[in-house]
Image 1 (tube, rainbow, N blue to C red):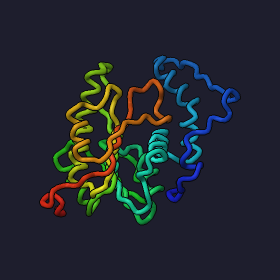
Image 2: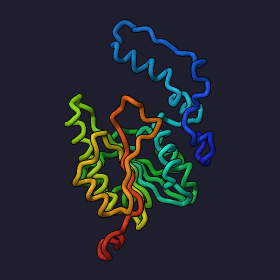
Image 3: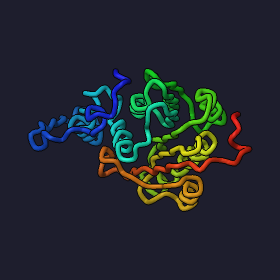
Image 4: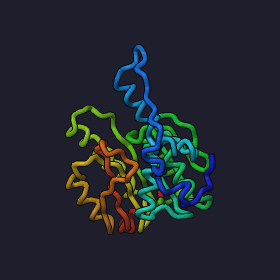
Length: 245
């Protein structure tokens, strides 16, 4: 799989929908023992243009297009930058980051699940909520980061308020880490659920970054409650905090 593609349409425009009504819709028969929900999921995957395009371009997941579309809009992934990818499995976002920061950049990823390493990146398995996780990431990064991205999500419960609080907790932990490792001018991007970012979290973002926005990329399914918060222009820490550890 290529790790040198640039921002051209082949790697950046999202899935092609030009075939429109001519697209052949595949239908999946309900196999004995397979739940109807599993059948619906499989049928959706087979007919999802982003899934098809991901396979065509060698991306490990359709989620790669979410980062592509966010970057095409906000232009934060640039050659030579250093990126930390939290919740990296199966590696789609890491692939995009490697392509866009190039050989002079650096990408470090971590996920609680074991996943195949992405060429050109440092990929680690570990629970980001574990006490040693931040230090492991800092050691691998070996310096400050320009961008911290988080696509982490807790298992859903089916109870929207509970799911919202769970993901906000992950965002808060990711932000705490970002404030420790980002260089001045850095970027923080994280998945949240619609319903908004908690006021305390939003206040903290606005206090530490020049601009804070919410965005839902086209690749995010319409029925999904996920959206993303992107904070740019990190204002930096006090002199005591900026010393390397």
